[in-house]
Each structure stands twice: as C-alpha cells, then as structure tokens.
Image (cartoon, rainbow, N blue to C red):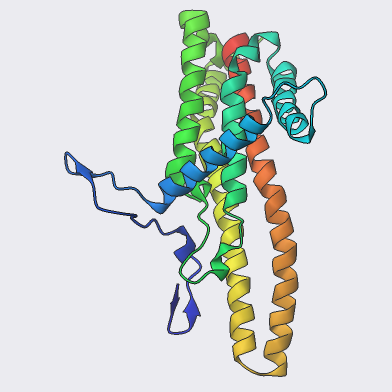
Length: 260
C-alpha cells in the first residue's frame, strides 16, 4: 500500500487472486478478494434473513428488522408500480440488500490489521455494470412480454403533437438507453470517490504525525476531524445509493408494466 512513504489511495481497489490460478478456455476464473467480499455479503444477507424468518406470534427485534426492510421495499413497489409490481419484490429486495451490505462491508475499518483491508465490490464498474444490465434486461423482458411491439409506445408519450414526433422519439430512445449507464456510474462513482477521499485524508494524518512538528500535528488533527465527518457521510451514502438504485429500478419497471 505504501511506496517510499507515500500512500496509494487506489490500492484499496486492487483485485487480488486468492488461492491457485484457475483457467477455462484461456479465461482466468480464479477466486479473488472481490469474489470473497461478495460471498461475505451474501452470507450476511442469509444470516439476516434466517434470523428474521421465525414467524413468531410476538416478533422479536430481529424479525421486526427483516419485516421492516421487506415492508420498505413493498411500499416502494406499491407507490411506484402498483399491486402488479409485487411479483418483483424478491428481485428488488435482493438488489437493495446486496448493494447496501456490500457498501457497508467496505466501510469496515479492517485496514488496522497489517496486510488486510476491506474491499468494496460496488466500487468496481464491472459489478455495478452487471447489476445495471440485469435490471435493464428485466425491464426489456417485462416490457415485451406484457405489451409485445406495443412496448415501443414508451418512446412516444400520449398527446405528443405530430410536429414534435421526429424530435421526441430520438430523445426518448436515447434517454431509455442511457438508463443502465446512469445506474452503474452513479453507484460506482459515489463509492469510489468517498473511499479515495478518506484514504487521502488518512495519508495527511500519517504524514503529519511523521513530520514531528506542530503544524504537522495540527494538519493530522484537522484531517482526523474530516475523516470522522466523511465516514458518517459515507455511511449515509451507502444506504442512499442502495435506495436510489432500487428506486430507479422500480421506476423503470413501472414504465415497462404501465407504459406512459
């Protein structure tokens, strides 16, 4: 992580191979730290759900927490899609919890252990891109499954004046095709920028204390205050980005189900 006394803020995003190298048809499919942290996220979600599915008559705190999250997703669907959107609750719940847990796991202060640090899987556009493409593909499948070629009516809002049709249709098509890129970039940029900022301020603390001067100590103290504030903001961003991703997916599903 450090080279010649300098901290590399991009080191935390490096994907490292774990275990032996595995290849299939020339493609490297080795287990990596990114895969490890995704598995950890799935384990946390499984344990969370396992503890809340006891169906007790008087629900405990754990069961209330699970019911609170599922109720939150159900209310989002009812508001943005309607009763027909209930069938997509499992996907939106999985999407929301996976992004939320992955974001929060990446915030764990494990770097205090030498040679070990938390890995934020949602800080890689390959992961956020896959999630975005999955959501976009579901929207396309649902749209054509329900409406057939009438799904293309989505690109021409009702009541559009005839002279505006040649302008509105290209704009709507471009807006529709940009959706997956908007999803993947929003989550990717939000997570990577916050982590880089925290790493930069941590380097100020290390270098300031290493200078053994009053100014260096002051810079370190001020940087520590900034890190505390940024850390609190990052926790909020972790939840907010998971919510926004699920919210936008539900809105896109609403377009596919109900059109304009």
